[in-house]
Image 1 (cartoon, rainbow, N blue to C red):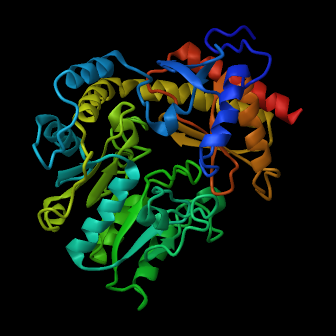
Image 2 (image 1 turned 60 degrees about the vertical axis):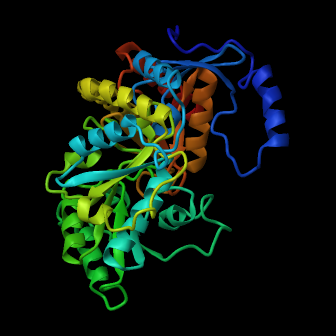
Image 3 (image 1 turned 90 degrees about the vertical axis):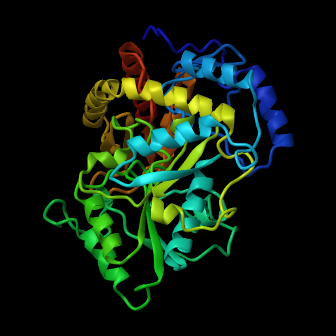
Length: 445
């Protein structure tokens, strides 16, 4: 295949310069920091990454769902330069500035449901998660939290406790704060051995039953959930699931926290993924990743009565809502607002090709996703659905050597995930699918 965008110039991937820096990394960087692709990047532009050896890759990872409109958009670059020429840091709690307010204003205007009007800005998604639970506890004076199996919420202590996957995220870091897991609507692997839609989305009813037990009644402060379970495998629940979950939370006087760190910022064709399911009413929203245009900024947003519960001085952070990051976020959100129409085009192209690949390669058990958040779950046997983690890793590695950067995820490490820029050109989308199919053919031959 003649490639238009991906270009591998070295005999091996990683090339010699990346390999040399890889040895340096082993000496200097803690072993616990994993690497998806051992190629050191020199330049990024749009949806193309170029490494220090001159190899170019189509980027279907987007920095794990961060560069939603591609790398270095001109508007973001200009906004960053303009802000940096004025001031870079004061700390909002010392001397405030308008950019912080404007980011909060933009989130409030677009927030799902109604009444989510007040925000606090932070640096990373985990920090926003941590503070959402902290605020919820202060508000209703309860200490326990619910989160979903297959969920991922970050690596700080509370966020880690809310995260489901033990290896590599939680092992050895306990004891962790008081959290409990409830079942997510993972229809491909239903934990109750039921079928949708005849099940009536019983998994949401099971949460209500669990909540009503003496162990939990009146003790659980909040339930946090991703609209699509990201790290857990890009698991898309039925449309009835979250409307029912939000009603269950309201019934039990708990705060429902919508974790849109990976699913938000236009990733699924709407500003916030939960908007795909009318009737869902979050009490709080946590955002990050894609809102910042590549800069570290996140937000905890909620109803005024919840957000105003903590005492003055109880919330904040030295770098939270940094002025340069706020400038980048505002420019990024402008691009997202006018680009949402592209998402359905990208989705149609990719879903069509993935469905065709499923017909060719039995290892593909399920194709799933919404918008520009798409995945393939690989299985050794379509009947038993035995997870095919080895094959997923092999396809990822084969794709990199052809010039395509994709990521794996999933509770069982058997899911190939893709989050392309919502501005990726059609010919680049088609080329990426050609490279992915070639990779499957190579691994499965």
